[in-house]
Image (cartoon, rainbow, N blue to C red; front, side, top):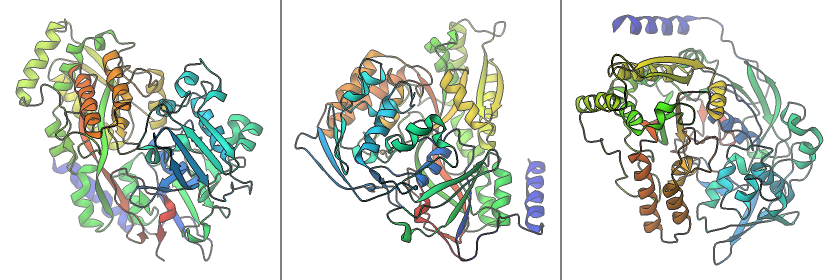
Length: 533
C-alpha cells in the first residue's frame, strides 16, 4: 500500500518543482480561463450531444429559453418571461432582443427549428424522448407524422408557443437542457451537419467557437453579440480533454489549468494538504451504475444472472475504501434528495443482506442459471479510460471473480465507449447518470421502452411504461411521487441495472477563480466565473 502512495507523492513533488508553466499567453487586458473538461467531445451540436463534457462546452456557447443561475436554478434565458394557460397545457414564451454570434437575430423560428431537429428521426437526437410531453413529438420520432405537427410554433418573430400533451410543471428546468436549445436555421440549412465546424458554427450564448484542435483543445471567446456581454468577465476559454486526472491534477497545481472538472476521489485528503482551497466537492444528483446488454447477450436476459452480478458488488468497500470522497452505496437508482419523490426511496430486495450473504446467494443464482466452476459465466466490461472509472472496474472485476465469473476489462476513449453503448457494442457498460433536471423522471425515464439509445440495457416492461404514463397525468404531486416509486420498485425488482454508488461532484478550482458555486446538478456556466489577476 505504501509503494504507490510514495510514488504518487514523489510525482507531485516533482511536478511542483518543475520550472516554467506551460500556459498559453493571455492577450493584454483580457481574462483567460484554462479549463480541463475530462474527455474530448464527440459533437458540439446541441440536438445530438449527450456527454457531460459536451454539456459543459455547449452550455457556454448556446442558451435556451431558460438558463441556469450560479446555483443551477432555472432563470430566464432567451425568454424574458412566459405565461401558462390555466390547464397547464400551453406555454407562451416572449423572447428578448438577442443575436447569433454572426449578428443575425435569434427568432422564435430558431427554437421551432431546433426542437423539430430534436424529434426528427433523421437527426437521431439521443434526447428526443424528453420531448415526448410536447404535442405530436412521439409520433414524429416514430416516423408516423411530419415535423409540422409538432406542438411548437412561432406566433411571431419573438413569441413562441409550446403545447403539451399533459402538464409538465418542471418545464422551465427541462428547457435549460441543450437538446431544447435553438438551432441557427440560416446556418444549418446552408452547411448541413458541417455547421458545427469552426468557422461555420454560430452561437447565441456568452461565447463563440474559435477553433477545435482534436486531442488538444477547443477555444472559445466572448460573443460580442450576447445580450449581457458587458457582464461576462472571462474573455477567452481553452477547454482541454483531461482523461488522466492525475496528470490534470499536476497541471492545475503548476498553474497550467485553472479548473479541472474531476479528480481522483481517493486523493481528496492529500489534495487538501498540498493544494488547500482547490478541491471542491458537493452532493450530486447522479448515480454510477452498470448496464447489461440484454439485446445481444442471452445470459443477461435471465434476471438471476443480472441479480447475481449486482449482488456481488461490494459497494461498501468501493465507497469507503476505494473512493473515499463521500460517495454513498446505491441500492436504488433515483438519488436521495431528488425533488418531488418519496422518502425513503425504493430499494433492491436484497439491500439488507450482508456482503457475505449476498455473495453466497449470487453463487447460488448463477448455479441455478447454469453457470458453475466447470462452466463459468464469461463477461466483458467496457468503460471509458478515465482513471477513477478504471479503478472502479477493477474492483467490480475482483468481486465478480470471487463468485466464479470470468471477467475481462476493455477501455476506450470516453466518446468511443459511449458511441459503443449507443450501438449496443458492449456486454456490460460502466456509466454515470447525472440528472438533467431535478425530478425523479430524469432518472426513471431512462428505462422507458421508447427512450431509445440511452436505455442502454433495453429494459422493456409495459407495466413500467404504464406507470410512468400514469404519473404524467397525475396532478397531485404526492400521488405522482408514489406512482413513480412503484415504477422504480418494479424496475429494481427485475435488476434492470446495477446501481453502484451515488456520486459526489468533484472539481479542482484554483482559488483565483471566482463565481464557482457548488450545486447538485453540477452546472457551472463560464458566464458566472472570473479569474483574479
